Length: 303
Image (cartoon, rainbow, N blue to C red; front, side):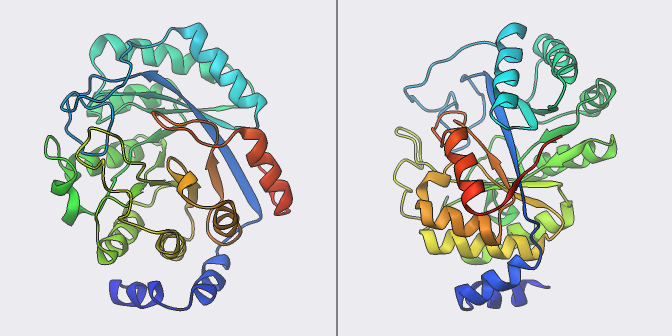
């Protein structure tokens, strides 16, 4: 489908839209989890982010966590039903010292039976991508965040193309790609359609859907009304239709949807959940998510 066709679908009857998106669904739900392995002091000026050093947010800064703490979090994630576990760090790109430590963390996670390694550590160069693959990283997460046409309204210290280049490197070296967006940052409906099509070109294995949770003292602190629940659901359905082979995954901000609408999304569009808390915002407990999966008669994916 082209942009005009998807835009027409976006504005169609919601139940009909769900009916179409549900044709591409399995009956499975996949859990993943993360550890916020390094927090704050990021040099980039992403307007949504509490970790940016450009804004005086009330956030705790800390360096890369140690190996024992990371493995403890991975084992806890596995216990709670996650089959993927991500090392997540703040910053534009990993520095040399931390990168070696991150490789060591990935080696340890790969030794943990029943869980697959993932990393979200910023913009990569070719050598870094090559080394991550060599160390057996299963999946790399790197969002486009928003449409290319809107990117300068969100961040100016790096480009949308920088993000795309990292996505290409991940695929070049044979790792799976998790690449998604943040909804509700002031983008237009047309730009949401653009995102869906840009992701179709990228072909990620997983598309994390974040919904902006406005953070005090960031430029987007008053952006809580930029998207409502119905438009979130419409966007999810169109994303699934445009990307039928990718798993749509609930991530940060899904608590802006009512329980009823979260269940609708899981029934018609969404097949993955980043369970537990996120980087600087809270989510649902894994037990609540497991209860919802059972209520919907879905299968929780296991290795």
